[in-house]
Length: 487
Image (cartoon, rainbow, N blue to C red; front, side, top):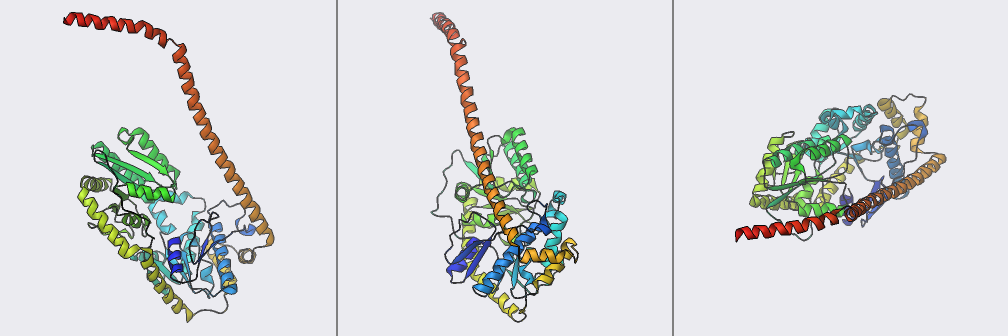
């Protein structure tokens, strides 16, 4: 989103990028990057942990308050572009003044279809309900691919007033092209993504075990990305520790910086994305940007992003044998890797370079804005519609709903003070956590050095030197005897 906002800003448009992040490092010319603070609303979310449906709605309300402020005090807002995930644009869509275009990323409903364990989340029913009610109130939908747009419309029975299909766009980060040096024909396979069931890490692990057991050359695997499901990471770590073939041939980096991510792309030979579903797949665009061949699965909108047999080998999802065969084929054929990589780079420049995508996005936003101008309302009617949303999504009755809506649309000053105290406590807790990590690292180093010292003391005191004085003369005598026998 930062890349797209920057490209639109460079083209002369007035762009506001609203984010929940507190560490704002984005420097985007022509873009107003704003942190959207979310004060607590006690009547709605008292006692709820982070990342629940109630707190998603609070964030959506905070986004709406900032959009309303911009519209009423800075300049009219022509259109709001918001992701489906966490229903960030749901309150904006209730205000008839703002055409809100919702980007159909992978829905929570789809994720629960793929991973049944997600039904164990404590508030998953409420999250699904909020997503459902947010989509029912969305008049304009943006599909990253035709497939994900069609699935979203069919799954939720929608009849939008306007749609647009535009893929992701990324600024070019490849830099000077460099061919990584290799020893003994080593082939490096890279997986980038959250460690979760949907990303197919377990399928890649099964394929890796088959390849390495088959002694398939010098192939190695790197898995980079943050933990999203502790069970998935645990299963990978257990397999690495138990399967001899994986030892030293598969490594997990965890979350990485942007600089490290780019280095991983430059150093790899093949990018593998064995996802069970992707609405689009940013990893696929990044792989093409860096001119890397791809092995992936025909799931969701992936087949609209890559070209099977041209810049990628595409197999069925959940098929570890087919995935291993595709990786083996690319790993054994350097010319095919170069051909796929070059074709992928051309596809990136033609379809996914952010400047071209920004122009297509501008055209779509102007069309949506023009469509909405004929039906735009002068009165927002947000409070009544938000009360109905609370009833439909959470079953909140008419007595409590006005109180919650009042807190969401106009938080009391006490809530802002509580929010500030919470943020300060969070920063202090984070700093304490970093100090604990540093202390643990120092203790591990000290323990290692203590062990080395004790070993050296035992060698010095233990009789290695005395034993050496006794054994060496005997070895020399045995050597002389063997020499005499030869003569």
